[in-house]
Image 1 (cartoon, rainbow, N blue to C red):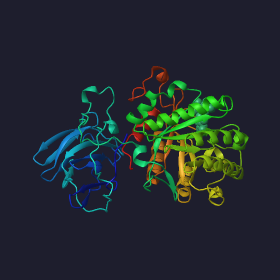
Image 2: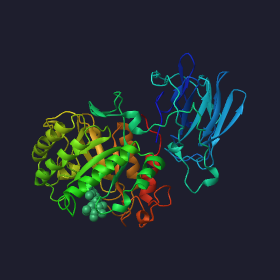
Image 3: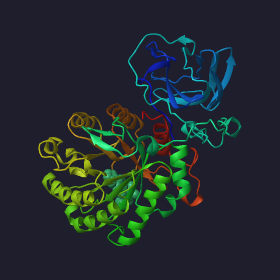
Image 4: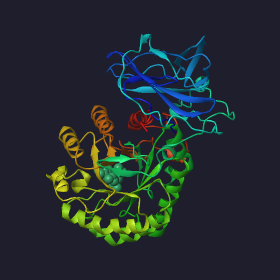
Length: 487
Ligand code: IDC
C-alpha cells in the first residue's frame, strides 16, 4: 500500500524548505531521486524518496544525502540504512535493493521529528542543482497527529531476505496513518480523457486480473489479495467473471455472490475492484444482454455506496460492429447508473477490445460515434508478443480523444501462452505510464500457461508473496506494479 502525496515532478529532486519549496533537477545522466511528503502532523512528517535509474543499464548501488534544518531530525528509516552526521542524513540500500535495473526505481521511507523539510540533497554524490517547477504543497500537512503506524509495504523486501528486513517505524502516537490507493484517491471519475481521483488529480491504477473466477477458486483468497495489496502494492484487482464456459450463464447467483465478496475483499485492502463481465465467445455482447442487465442491476445496487468499484460491461466484443457494441452499452449503462450513479463504466471495443484494429478498423469509429453516456471509458487490450508498434501507435492517437483503460493485457501472445516478450511489454507499459493509462495484467492464476502470474501449484500451496512463487511473466509484472504510484 502506498502513502504518497506527490510534491514534485518526475525526474527531479525536490527540496521543500520550511518557508517555501525549491526544486533541484539532477544532471541528465545521473540517477534521479524524488522526495515526497507522504504524511504530516504537528510534530513531524513522513517522507519517501524514490531513486530512479533513467539509463538503460543497471546501477549497482545508491546513496542519498539529505540536510535538514536544525531542530529537525530523521528518527528512523525503512527500506534503507540510515546514518546521521550533524544535520546530514545519509540513506544507503537496505541490502536487497542496492541494484536498480535500467528504467527501474526503488523507494525508501523515513520519519522526521520536526517540521523542517530538506534544504539540500545529493544522489550518489552528485549535487542536486537547478530550479524546476512549482509544486502544490496543499496536501502535505494534516492538522491532527495520526495514530496508526505505517507498514513497510511500499517496497518490502523479498520474504526470503529475512536478515535485511527493514525496520518498521515504531507504533508511537505520532506515527502517520496507513493509507491505501483507495484511501488516497476515493471515488474516481473520468475527467476529459483521463481517470481522476476524488480531488480531480489525473491518476493511473496498476494491477492484475483474475483468470476466470470459477476456474481457479483457490487463487482468490484473502491471503492472495493480501499479497497483491501489500507485497505487490497493486492498486486494482480485476474480477474476471466469465459468462460462458461454465460461468455466469451456468451459475448466476453463485458467481454474483463471489464477485461481491471479492469487491469487499479488495475494498478491505484499499484496492479498486474492476467487475469484468467476461464475454468472449460468442463475441456479440448482445447475446448476453439480458444476463448483463440482470447482473449489473444486482451488483450496482449492492455496491452503490462503495468507492472502489468500476464496471466493465463487455470484456472482448469480436466479430460484431461498433454500432452493435454501442447499442449494448447504451442499454446496460442506464441500468448501472440507476443503481450506482457515480460508478465509472468501461465499454469494450471492437476486435477483442483492440479499438477495432484487430478487425481492420480503428478508434476513429468510436470518436465519430461515441457511446451516449458520461463518466465512461473505453477498453483496450493487448498481448505484447502479438500486438506491437501499430497497436501502440493507435493507442497514442486514441488517447488524445478517448478515455482509455487497459483492462487486460498479457506479456505473451494473444493465445495467452508462449514466451514472455519482455521488450514489447516494457515498451507498452512505458507508454501507458506516460499516458497515465490504467492497466490490469492477465492473469493472476497458476495454470500452466505463459500468461500466468503464478507457478503451477501456488494457489493450492497458499503462498502468494515474494518472487519464488512467480513465473517469468509474474516477476516482470510485479516489478512494474510495485514501484511508487504517482497519486
Ligand atoms: C484465455 C486463458 C486460457 C483459457 C482461454 C479460454 O488464458 O487459460 O483457456 O482464455 O477461456 C483474451 C481473453 C482471455 C484469454 C486471453 C488469452 O480476454 O479470456 O484467456 N485473451 O487467450 N483476449 C485476448 C487474449
